Length: 340
Ligand SMILES: *Cc1c(COP(=O)(O)O)cnc(C)c1O
Image 1 (cartoon, rainbow, N blue to C red):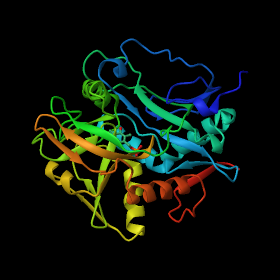
Image 2: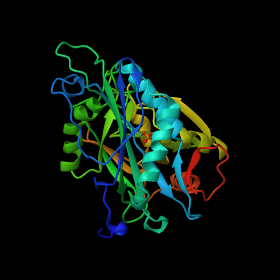
Image 3: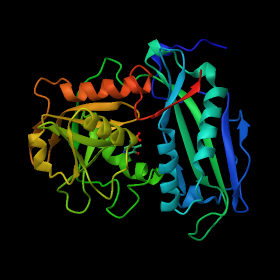
Image 4: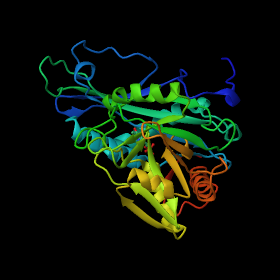
């Protein structure tokens, strides 16, 4: 086998040795199957292909300086997947089964877990699809849950840095009472045009306002938003954003650090008042925001005056990463050692 160039991995797909699968048939989940095939053989009338019965998750396994391999809050991913299943009428996979399959797929692909020094990680992608054939709009009666893994490079190739964002008003990723709170593929299809627009304009990502009033902050692409001011961590309360596990963890850490945490509507104009702001999610932990441009209103909210990540973002970033890598004490018991 060719040696993997750990230092130059991107966020792309690389074939690994195994994936794990579990089928739902006749009203129950079957046994866990280990598979080395990369393809799925499904019916052309499967509901995932026509009516978007598709849910996914994303988490990582970290090779730590103590040699152990840890995963972060996988019970939260299991719970969020269950919530998504309730949202689009798919059968819920029990948390224990989800965790067993995550551990199994990581252990089976041990040789693809990047070394600690590389800054790379093993990305874990669970997905659940409706495989039963339907022509009318109905939920399927059969489902397939798959987890595959792929090694991915560090998000910040040139070190932790701040990025510019742009408010896009032409497109919404989700409606107030729609599927924004669920991790379903359809939300991503809805975001592709806005995302392309932002990239074509030279921004790192698109920034969404609430779909109904276009007044309040919603999300930064596929990441949650938070702002910092007066020793307070502020993050939007909305019915159209995905409940990020990273954001939930950062709220806890901010509180542990003696900060006040507020979850409330954030009017666009309030962006001018933040000392720091960031986009958060599993991929980057925190991607600090340099500025947010509102092209239509010819406004630019400069958040980082020197273009660098602020002290609170930096502290939160290192704190969470050090927990994920087993460097700092895991007082909230967020990590699971998958391999000793
Ligand atoms: C996955 C995702 C996030 C980040 O969630 P984490 O659990 O922190 O990785 C944020 N927003 C959207 C739209 C997402 O799909």
